[in-house]
Image (tube, rainbow, N blue to C red; front, side, top):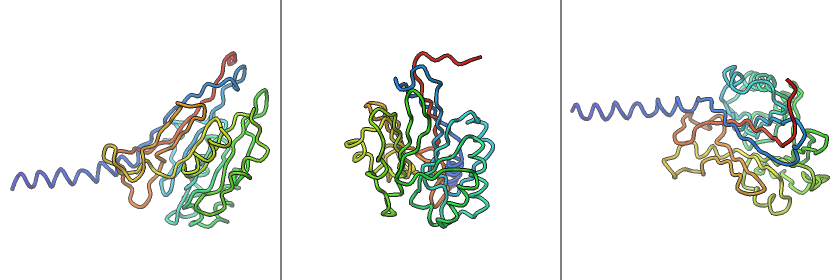
Length: 258
């Protein structure tokens, strides 16, 4: 009987552990070196996706800082469980980090498309819908190319890449990574970003509903698929910790003024 009580006691700790894991604040740092950034200041991009119902707090801001060139929200900023107040508060916090850009996720329109547009506009954010946006001009232009959510039927890769030149450093963002192969084969962007999968959210070793998030710099087109910051349905994580990402782009030959 004592053995059974011990087993039940141990099992009862598992949900508590999974709940605690779901609210960790993990900021992963990635550095990308490329000749396009030679003799130029470094460029910092903060990428966060799949916030859903999770609250963005001052603790995240302390870890990330505010010296960021762009904050990129990779979709699922919210879902049907999120009220206007939580949505607005999260965007205000993220806007303290840096200028906001955003692409649609498969759950965002559950809140109401007009509401999302209104709240993004209130923080002077930009929605990237099948188009490109210049992030930095100079010796080498940095362009962000984004598409609408694939499940909406509105995604248009061809339209998004119109006017994008081969010599420009190109960052492609989609909520879902399912389009990566199509984009790489035709356009060869320098960096691809996505979320959506949550890394499986609950996984046991190599087994999960989706693959675990990865940062793959083994080819000329670097890819980052994030585990995401929040959770869908139940606020549990196991084997796929929540994460967001600070990406620093650097080159050679530039010295910061002290």
